[in-house]
Each structure stands twice: as C-alpha cells, then as structure tokens.
Image 1 (tube, rainbow, N blue to C red):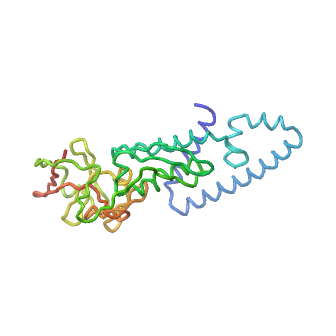
Image 2: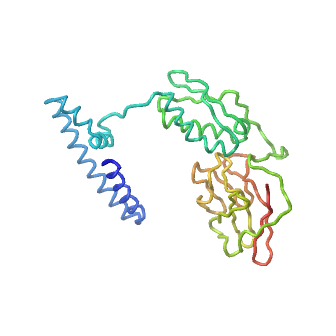
Image 3: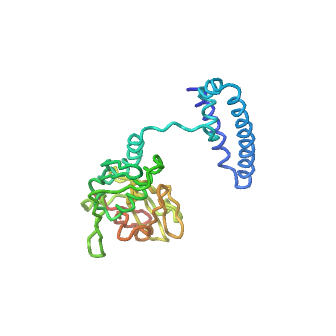
Length: 281
C-alpha cells in the first residue's frame, strides 16, 4: 500500500466514525474540516504563487510527488489529466453494464460525434423494455456525463420503446414459468412492517413485506437496472430503490416512477404463522 493510500484510508476511517454521530455533532466536525481545508488551500495558493516566481522547475518537481499532487488536486489547484474521450465513455458503459445484463440487456457505443454528442445502442430486452427511456436517461446517459462532462447529448439509435396498456400482458424481464411448489420462507413475526425481509428462493433473491396480516413477495430487483431493493427506505408502504430512486407500492408491486412497470410478484399463502411462497423457475 502506498503512502497516499494509507493516508486516505485513515481519513475514510474517521469519516465513517463521524457518519455515525448525530446531526449536531456531524455539523461541528464538518465545519471544523471545512475551516482547516480553507486555511490549507489559502496557504497552498500563496506557496504556489511564490514558487512560480522563484522557480518553475521546483514547482514541477514538487507536484511530481504523489502526495503533493493529491492534495493540490483535492483543493482544485491543479487539473487532473483526462483519459481519451472514447476510453472514458467505455468506462462509463462498463459501470452500468452489470445492471443491464441482469435484465438480459446490454449497451454498446455506436459513434462519437464531436463536440458534444454520443450515440449508443441498447441491446436485448433493454431495447424494448417500457423503462428503457429511464434506463437511457438515468442510467447510461448519466454515467457518460459523469465521466465526460463535455458530452451533453446521448442518443440511442435503433431505439423503439414499447408502450403498454393495462391489457398488454406486460412481462418483466425476470418473468418465468410457475410450478405448483410452495416453499416455507419465514414466519409472520420475522417479516417487518416498516421495511422488507430478504430471502432466497431456488437461488433467487426475494423480498417479503407485511402490512398487518397481509404479506407480499417480490423479486429483489428494481425494474430499472436490476438493483437490489432490500436496503431501500420503506415509508407509507412505498419502497425506494437505493440506487436510482425508483419507487414501488409494496401492496401491489406497482412502480410509481414509470407507468405500466411492476415488480415481479410471487404468490404467498399463510398457514398458522408460517409464510409460504410459490416456486417460480
């Protein structure tokens, strides 16, 4: 481990401790941190000005040190070197690709059109999913813009999202054939009313939620990019995906963010205090 990695690890350790404090304590710590950083930035700015006047070679030599460079970069006193645009775009696509593949989809770069446009192609189920508009804008487009701020337009080619209505028989990318096997997953008392319980069924992650004596079960995967929902905030019977903010009613599985898209539901029955889920495969 390099010196800079050790220092950053130490900072992260203290930040993790502070994150557990109550809000008033965190405000004091954050205020102190900002005041110290402002003092350091002012001192470093004056030091750079003096070095520029005295010896540019000495300044370049100092910046070559990774710790000095990291601190100056943190205070925005030097500019980070940019990787080639195509490389940064591919890095962005790699970031969202696992989520797309969880829906049997993918994305590929089609063309870079200077100065500000990128063309991509959604592949597989992602090209026709009702949530594909948001997959593009909140997933692919946002990732590209994060890595490439000079890009302002991300255009999908061969992109024809399907519009569904109540009678369209919309099937989630996670849909599967149903068998008649019922499997005990939990007891009523194990299922919380104000959050969800994550369980495993035939190698598939599910979430269980209870409202009074009514239990619902859904696949533990957001319809957007397949992100896990088990750590999502539950409020007023609505769960929010912790990754991109998609919201679902836990009573019905209906998505409140995108019309006509729902979580894949599993049939539930209760016998005595035991909760059974119907196997799907």
